[in-house]
Length: 464
Image 1 (cartoon, rainbow, N blue to C red):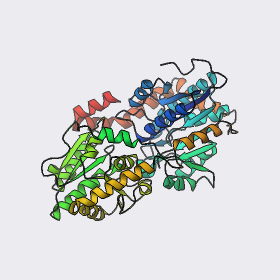
Image 2: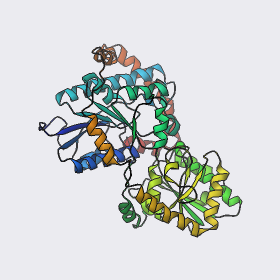
Image 3: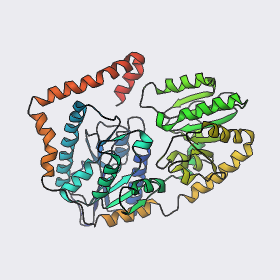
Image 4: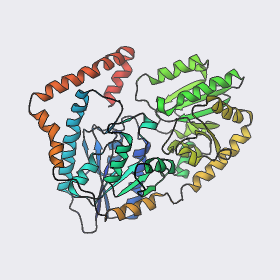
């Protein structure tokens, strides 16, 4: 792998810096996979195109994927302006501000060493590449692939409206991954143009991977209606809704089983899901397969797949279920509602109505031919969705156009602002005090996790 500032730029080279927010400690998320596919398509379109990545430290699955493709990158220890916890203590704000602003200064220096034609930010979470581009007057594009607060439970430090307004202010192009998210973001961008680009999913590749055997047995004997849910195990992803629905089906005398595929960020969340399954009387009908390099055999083993999150910006797993030829039940909010044709390729349900979800599952349990028919129609729709106006090809053309746009530029004093936390910490007295105060806020939670599940906590520590 070459360093980001090696190799001089030829006269025809298009140099684009892509900014990512996640180390991907467990697996590549949908945002990372979509960006990688976009870059691969751009390289096929233009042999002179050169991508360079700016990503969060420490290294995880994302850097491994970049290195596998031979792409250049630099990593920095930043966090973001959209964070997991509301109202963090001042010590935590200052602690991370030092890293965030130091990283911004380093990114500015990186762009000065080798100035790109365009900077692309691939997340609502981390604005530091956008700030660096604005300091230097470099065109910038922003891919918003999540709601932030509604889907991931994040907190906008400066408010949702203000954050999206700043995204529009600092960008010459804004993209979302669904019409639903475009409408949501558009409330705050005052009529500005927002382009939609759907993630690319290769239907034939999905079919080939689905034909393999699953790494672990997804369902027990006499499974009844076999249900698979793929996605990170978390409260916002809503696997608990399916467990509750399976319990309600059992109360009606209907047999169903569910296989949950995906890693977890909270070390005890699998235990909490199983506690819920025991309370519903269906613990023997729930299999947690964990993170799988190939989740598609688990999809193929099911009669129906579910996207049970309260809202999804797009719903990549929804499209992958469809590509595998499976009927899909998805929550009616967000991007999944654009993919699933209710009553044709699957069903939609209101995420607050678990009886409705159970009713949808009961339809398939009583009529397997309906599930098969919806699955066949879902695959046809997935094929149609690979050739549409929201393609990577159209997005790339828009990005090439953006590289020639007039950029937004911050005033010269912006560099001074970014240096303030760094200067304060470097003064000597501030760093130890802020660091100790920050550790004090985190220590009780670490002790609790270690006491509850010591081996899982230690494994998580090594992974990240």
